[in-house]
Image (cartoon, rainbow, N blue to C red; front, side, top):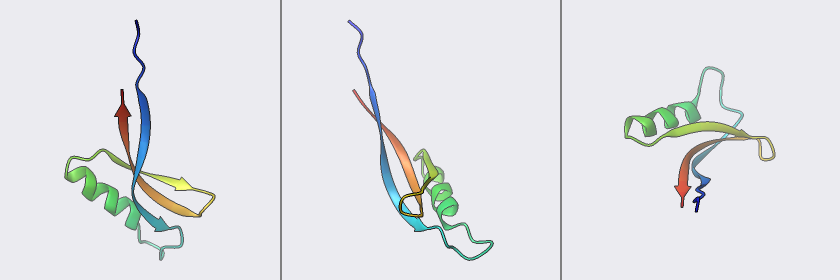
Amino acid sequence: MATTAQVTRTILERFPAGAPRGSWPAEEHAAAQRAQGTNAQVVMDLRTDQFLVVTDTTIQ
């Protein structure tokens, strides 16, 4: 019998898309999370016009 794993995303932080030019707070936050061992990445939520720092969680 095969088992299936479901991957869900956990939002670690939200940042407005209108950051000042040359400022990347979402990318900086994701980099800090990765330095601490969390596999964080930045995605854009078009509906809310925000950058989300997320991590994947596998549920079995």
